[in-house]
Length: 317
Ligand code: 2P0
Figure (cartoon, helix red, strand yellow):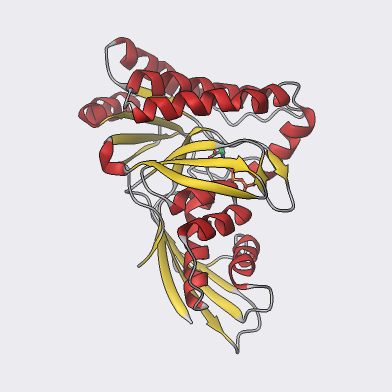
């Protein structure tokens, strides 16, 4: 009745923003991501008949704030009539700041809870359960380059290319360490209801997915850079044009984009992407990682740098 699973966050290159079914948490658009190797969340789930309610310890401290969503994820994996669970989590990077901590947490908790209940499930089934807890978590069940297809009543997630087939690095410029002003779940609904660009965003996603899929198959860095930056800025345009506006960026976010533009004009293979937070993720050729890190470290307002390669999907430890 006790199992531990580990999962890494993933960074979307073609973004998920908006839901077509909030009840089942089904995304309105497909997405393509890369799973990281060096940032991780480990989750231990222990079911205990004598426990009155679920308990969560995050990095050895009791945490009641994240407990409701994790309890819900365990209900999804183990059923609502399950015994109560003692959950303990370790995470080696800042949570709730747009670093995809929810993806790795929910992927790991669904794998650990299923195993602790003795239920054997395929990776595809686990991805669907993780996705019901948090859309982006479905992608962290797989390693390398991952596509989530949005079709029917379930999501279909698959590996486009394994991590070692095209070694890229991600340099994260941390520009703010506190929690974000509005969570993605709520922000997506605001965008769906109010942004005049939302329908166009959903309608154009298939083209961006096809471009990214082709670029990944051909390992064409320039093509992937072009569609990933375009898709990211389009998602943020939807956010900015929502009412109230959803603006996750700060001064340093924009300064990092300028640094990356300069690196690109110096011939460095690097592109940016930004999620529901102010951090900038620079994706680069592994030969250029030190150059990218040095430039981002020297950028005004950058507080910290995290580096990662590409890694594998969620698994039992
Ligand atoms: C993504 N994001 O594709 C996009 C890009 C943020 C910006 O998926 O409501 O935590 O739990 O399904 O997965 C963040 O949203 O949202 C996200 P829910 P989730 O990575």
